[in-house]
View 1 (cartoon, rainbow, N blue to C red):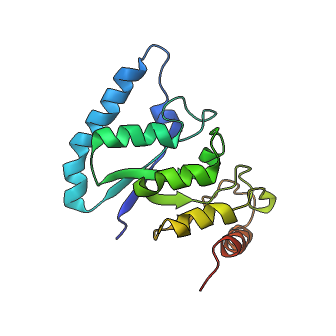
View 2: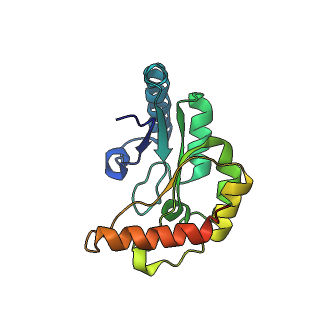
Length: 169
């Protein structure tokens, strides 16, 4: 299909069972992606790992945790996926997380934490400013969660919000 980035989210598939140790899970995560990296490089694919908030999973809940693991994986084909919704559960501000994570970002989701296109509460301008100032030149997309709203309305509201946050030249 021509895409070069695959986002890895999957909250339930990675949630740790209470009997599993976190250090062992981290080691398995690192080993898996280190072994996968040569195949990713050969296929010219980047996995953009998406951390998720603690309401969705108990494994890898912050950009800082993700970056620490990515440093150990040490592969240009395993990077970070940032999502505004997930970042909103961190104690750091979203612009601060973006600024710190910029060298690692392969993909960005501008999702409102409320998950509803017509109920946008997030001010995306400071977030967009960090991306622009940091030289981010990759995709910014919006993920659809509420399928009760027509695709046309979701797309229109999403584009309106993105255009307001990312001024054109």
